[in-house]
Each structure stands twice: as structure tokens, then as C-alpha cells.
Length: 399
Length: 135
Ligand code: SF4
Ligand code: SF4
Image (cartoon, rainbow over all chains, first blue to last red; front, side, top):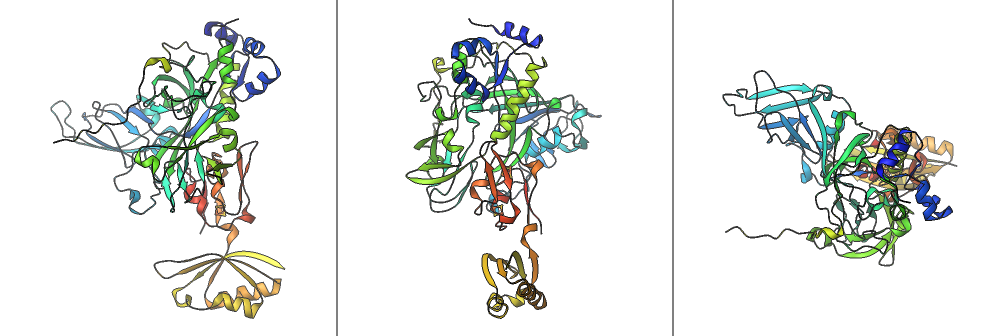
């Protein structure tokens, strides 16, 4: 018998909802038959915690006296974008101070960037703001230097245009020298491998065709409550999939938003990727309402059934071809050793499985205690039937 | 028999001296070089594992200090800040001595100081500055 989100919410309010994590459901489904499990379980919680590019915060600092229409702005020395209005500022996770040596001293360490400012802001630390403007009749001020603090801001909104990518590449290095990539330090000649997905706990891998996740889905975001607000950028449902529907390469993504003031530095971490840059590590957990048997069946997916493509990051990835060397399952990856071209290669994560597990548990507790109700998405994320074709840039020479 | 890991810092004046040779021959110690580095200022740093009888070890260390070589025990060099660690496991696969190990059930790491040779590989790999060098 099918359930509705409204019915599940009634149970949550009464403290009667049966909520389990995407890890726990695997064993439950093994013990019971799927039909019975689908009747009994109301919500499956997922989680992921990893570096997520395409993250940032939107803040409104309030108007100064006299007024300023900010043109250029720095937060703790990190440049942000003020090209929205007078005092709206968007700070991206990968922004770097002008005087950061970057990769001039190779490999760069990127000790402090946008992601670190976000962590400090959410931790309640004072942030140094330096702004300049050209001055107008209505906004005469040309310079502003002040401390700001999250508690005094009108709005502080985490707005990440692309997070929680459904599956991801495993990076290796086929060349004969060490390379530093956004997928970590890769030793020559298949010396090691990095992966970056929570596998069986990962939100979009538990709802592979986006049958429950859409615009308006309420989620765990950075330790607080957030929402899915759109599909993420580079959302690409039309990729090769397994029989169960699991994408075999990176595919769907989420754009998410939430009140930064409720979030915590434990789940939003400034990240320094040697040789690559700064970033933000974000904690996300998505609840999946078990509306029917089919949806439950998707959440039962385990690491043995999820495959990631192994890609060479020395030549193939940078050139834009991303040729797949082989596929490995997350079960293999999590043993710490995979086999590529007949060679044993030590593998490690960049996203934390332990933290993903913690997020799924926290979200489960919130729902069980009636603190967190599910929402009905306004419309679902575009799926395989949406006719999306993923485009690479077609360069057209400028005469 | 005792075993110790130490970092030796040589002033420029001592770089070309056969110090390890003396340790081996005159003090009857087994010296295993883990890492050697000469900085642009010509200061040399040598990371060694050294073993021998207790008294020989002590005499060897005294000899080094008299020469003007700075001796630091290695175990203090690398610290793991557990509260900053996300247990991503990124550092574990590159640790040459398995000082960083992963509990595969919990998917959490542990750090065994005894096994650490302070190669510092993990320091630049950790995205969250959860491993620091103390010097
Ligand atoms: S310094 Fe080297 S040996 Fe010590 S924990 Fe780090 S990687 Fe392992
Ligand atoms: S790389 Fe850093 S955060 Fe990741 S497990 Fe190692 S110490 Fe912890």
C-alpha cells in the first residue's frame, strides 16, 4: 500500500514514524521482504560530508551611515562579489586572498580562502570587512572598514549551486611524476587512488531517478535545516546506469540553500587542497519518504552495487576526455585497496564516511523526535526523461 | 637493545662530517637513515632510527650534542588533532609506515606515534590541518 508525505508527517508528529538510515535499511530489507519493509519503514535518511565546490554564502551586512554601494569587498582578506546591489555580498568557497602565493610555490597550500571565512563566520567569529566604492549622490561613501559578525547580519544564507553529486570519479595518476589535483595528491604510476562519495549513504544514490527529491525538499544542511532549491549545475541524469538505475559516473546534483545562522562549523569546514585551492566541506542529509515499494527498493542499494569510474588525472581528466580506465565498487574502495590494470592501488576517501553516517543518524533523530517534518517537493528534479543533454563548451574564436 | 627515532639538525659547519660513520664505528650503533634534507641555508636535517645498547645510545647522543648537532626525539614531531579530523581517511593511504590506520568497520582513523617516522606526507594531504608538525 502506498503512503503519502502527509501521512508520514502525521506519524512523525505523533512520534510514531519508523525512521532508519540508508545503511540500516540494507539489513532490514535482507531480513524482511521488501513489501513488508516498505509498509513498516516511513523514512530512510542519507548523509554525505565532503569537499563541495560550488558553495558559498550570501550576506546582507545592513546599510552604513552614510550609505555605501560596495564595489569591491574583502572578508578577512578574501575577495567576495558585491555586484548584486549596495550591501549584498556573495562569498564563494574557492576565493583566495590577492596575496596568496597560489601555485607559485608549488604545490600551493591554500591555507585560508572563502571556505575558511565561511567556517569562521558560522563559528561566530568576528570577520574583518574592507570595502571600497566609487561613490554616488545617493551612496556617497567610498571606503568602509569594519568588523562584522554573523549575529548582526540581516541575512546570512548558505547558497550552494552544486552539491551532493550523485556518484563520482576515482582519481589515479598514470604519469611518472606526483600530481596535485582537487582529488588530492596522486603518486606516479598508479601509486594511489582517491574517491569522493559516501556510496550507499549518499543522498542521490538512494533516489537514483529523483522520484522523491525536488525543489522544496527539506534537508539537513551544514548542521541546520536547508532546502533543495533547484537541480545543481551540471545536473546530468542521462548517463550510463546499472540495471538498478545507479549512475556509473557523476550525474545528478543539488542546489541547496539554508539559514547559515542555524548552522555549525562542525558541518561546514574550510578546506585546503594542496596544489589545487581552497574549498568548503559541507554536510548534507536528505530524508527519503518511503512512499511505496519501488522507492524502498532504491534505498536498499549497497556499496557492492555502486560502481565508480577510475580516471587518470594526469592526462585524461585535464584534457577533458575523462576516459574510464575501469570501474570499481564502493565496497572495494572502502577496503582501502583496488586493482587497476592488474596493479594493487591503495585507495582512500576525500569525503568522510564516518561523518556521513553521523549525519544520517542526526537526521533520523530529528525526524523521530518530531523536530523535522518532510516537505512535498514543488516539482521533482529533472530525471532521465527530461531531455537534458550535457554540454561541453564549444569554443568559438573571437575575431 | 634500545631503539630511538631522532631528528638531527646540523649547522652548516658540520654538513660534510662523517657523523653517522662515527656513530656506527665508535659507538657500536645501528643507524638507519629515514630521511635526509639540506636546506638552502645549508642546514642539514637527518631523520634516523638508531639502535644499540642503552649506554652506547646515551654516549652517542652526547657525542652528537658536543659536536653541536641538535638532537630531537621524533615522536613529538607529528601531532594528530583528533577534534579537527573528519576521518576522511585521505592521509591513511599515503602513510608509508601505517602509523595512520583505518578501522574499516567504523571508517575512522587512528594514529600510532610509535610508528610515525615524521615523513610529513600526511601533513600536506590533510585538507583540514588536522595533522601538525611540532618543531
Ligand atoms: S608523518 Fe609520515 S609516517 Fe608519520 S603519520 Fe604522517 S605519513 Fe605516516
Ligand atoms: S586527512 Fe586529515 S581529516 Fe582526513 S583522516 Fe587524515 S587527519 Fe583526519
